[in-house]
Each structure stands twice: as C-alpha cells, then as structure tokens.
Image (tube, rainbow, N blue to C red; front, side, top):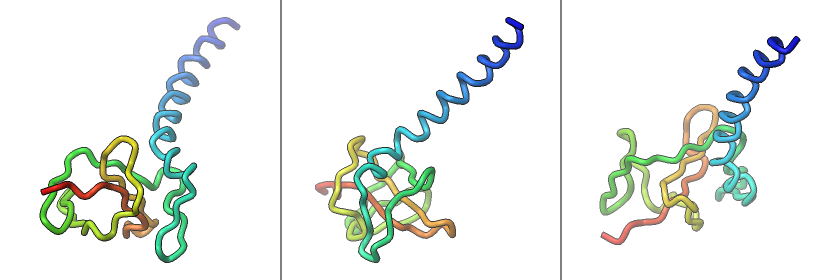
Length: 103
C-alpha cells in the first residue's frame, strides 16, 4: 500500500510541477484579456512562446529565421522583457508582444 502511494507521488508531483511551469508563462497574457486588431483573443492554453534569442533590426525582430515587424507588436510590454508570440493552430501569428529596442 505504501509503495503504491509512493509510486503515485513519484509520477504525479513531477507532472504537476511541469504543468505549472508551462502555464505560468501564459498566465500574464491570459489574465490580461488581450485581443488583436481583428478581435481575436491573443492567447489560449499553450499557444504563446517567449523567444530568448532575438536579433533586432531597424524594421523588426528576427527569431528562429522568422522576420516579425515591430508594428505587429501589441502596445503591452511583456513582464519578462522577452518577445512573445501567440499563434493560431496553423502557425500564423495571432499576437506579438515586445518592446521595440532603441537602435
């Protein structure tokens, strides 16, 4: 009985911790109730990603080989300072959060 309980905890605790970490990043977008210019909600569960490796150009960001113009960014600064993109199911950008750097 005790072994069964310990096995359950060994599985349940790491899963709960990973789930909490995944949701923690999305929570500021979800709780903000942000919508894009088309009226779509910016973020659902698990469809936003913060990018750590971002190159800034005069017109926009380059991240993972994708160019994102500054003018697509929402007028909201991400609390972690990272460029964050929320995508639709087909991979297109729904909302972009980030601050244009002073070049």
